[in-house]
Length: 392
Image (cartoon, rainbow, N blue to C red; front, top):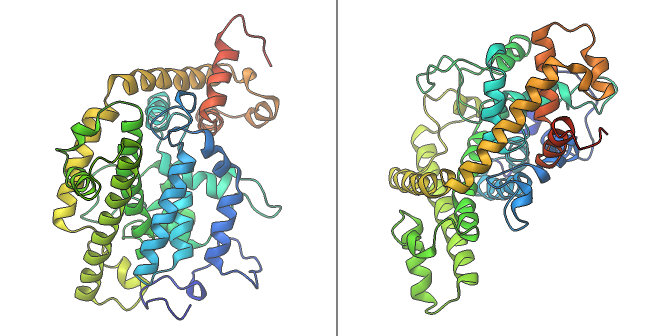
């Protein structure tokens, strides 16, 4: 690890795991974290969880697993260019969406509404719950027993949660507050640089690839992209270099250049900020009053313009809204029925539900519903609400 910058997260300097265990002689602690994430049940389920389009709407659209892998690839490339720890950045990218329920943000909205009486639902807090409690793969502890640095990066995926002027007035999710009361993840500060890289790699991936999926779905045309900030000029460059190029090649050429432009901008701006603040350690990065990994002002503005276009023409498109509306109903009806009638839960979950008060039962039902894939949620809803479907 001699090639790492002094301010990177060095595996030999990790703050360790909550439950001490012998470490591998072949893998660093962050490589081991990454591998545990890849092998966990929640990671496999991402294959059938919505990014924007529900799984049955077409095989050519990105599920959350594909999105996650694309984020990981971008994060590794950026971390390498900045002499940061690639394994930690990759692990954080692979874990960042594990807590999403079925149907993506629509499912999250439905569960947040259903859980309003019990503190709501936050997918980032649920990611922490999966990593520290719900995965049951090891004999000596619940969860994956990841390093402090990986858990910190997951919790602070969107920045500090408390005690920082960069933080909004939104309350810290109860699940995170409870956990950090026992295992302090220093939620009042920014995360290390690798976590900041993973967070912006997420933005790069979904901005560019949602543009691709929106074109595939016919929600807008390539001609409409011509006037979109960032994407429009890149599209013009491709057409100028390859006159008459067919759409099948035009879109991927535009998307890969779009990603490269955002990545190059982020690296250049981050290098300038690092030179200005001159951090010596990873803790110096955490102690800053602003993120050190960021886009330039011009790129931030262009990104906002691209995001506004996608919001208007894709995320709020009536076809997407109709499926999102149905998705919210599905998860909310599943939650409400199972909370009122826990006898409808599978037997192993019924055993866990015995003797629980209503708030604890609500959390159990939430764990069950949030863990579903899109496909399983639709099938479970049909089994529970369709009178002509046999119970299974």
